[in-house]
Length: 260
Image (cartoon, rainbow, N blue to C red; front, side, top):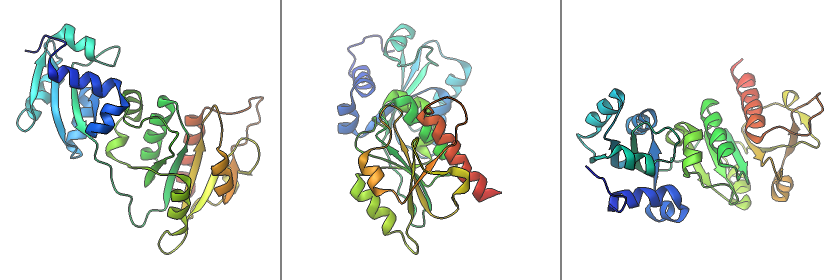
């Protein structure tokens, strides 16, 4: 049983939880909780190491036993596990997972572009919503939060294992849309100032939907690249919506138009 905070495996977990540079250098990240770990395993994600608390739940014990056949599983004292966990109420199991980005399908027709989303909770929720709406992928501009940070991973609830997640600048995003096979995709920018009401716009065509940050809105580069601006009509006396909430409304307007 591991009991020391100075154990190399514990130090590795702490570095991956706390530092983006460590995650980028190792091309790895930490996932916590039985549900996420099981989902990652079933999705074919490579797990390097699993740590289990000395006071695990029955579900955690069962999952650890299943994983132990092919993955190193180490027991950690309950007190130490609480110290290294990034959650307030640890479930008693965490794992180091390899970053394995998915390729964008060649015939993609629905992308979401996160335009400078710096809030980890908003970015993670956007990923989760994108996966639920069957988006082909999510593109992150350079100013976005680290997609593998613990808060983003928790908020995404397994979307990392289902979505193509790409990092691209605006020149690359424009090229991706213009050079799409058979038919170019339109860049639609969600705006709070002006644009066509979202339910009056044809969202059945190939498109990339741009969601800006709540604090700063749409970037100048996104405005310049846009084929069309769309808005969510708000009859109430509120300036704007939370970025993740706005994304949910717009993404499921795409779903409504395509599936009804």
